[in-house]
Image: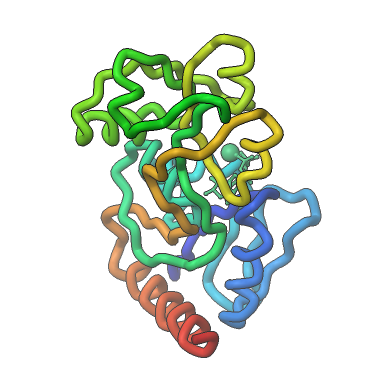
Length: 213
Ligand code: ATP
Ligand code: ZN
């Protein structure tokens, strides 16, 4: 049996449209948005799986999918053993530290001994270690921006794209700790046939990107 690439994409969210568009521009056709969990391409040996973005690194590591598109923030935070094959240039955002707007900021040392709320304990922990700061990390899975307002933390570390969510929660961005964009990830050891399909796909992706620059 000839092999086929299984590619995991975000079902619906900030990565989805650009991910679907990328394959369209590569001339790879498949149905999406039908509510189905998977779809086989009609003109390329690929099958697409539609999942929550957070689940994609794990599925790629476990071999349920061969490839996936996720934000680099999610890939790094997952701590999964996966390869970053290519940077895709969309869904750009940054992970930043923010504090209440009225508070003074003299630098990262201000966070020493403080509580910081985040959904990114691994990335934040690495950053604090590099900066030699010891602080308490409080993990919350969503609505991190409200933590200072309800007395749960003195600072937050969260995804920022425009800054308007911070502003409406009375916070100000004080330090960018990680810059992210969508990346193509792969299982670390692909069979020869799948690797050659990936090479074909990458060739098309690079051509699409080159045409835009
Ligand atoms: P899912 O339902 O699939 O779990 P989600 O709500 O976790 O989706 P999205 O908000 O769709 O995720 O964001 C997906 C990715 O898009 C983020 O991990 C990040 O890499 C990127 N991104 C770009 N801009 C933003 C933003 N303003 N807020 C959040 N994520 C952003
Ligand atoms: Zn998610």
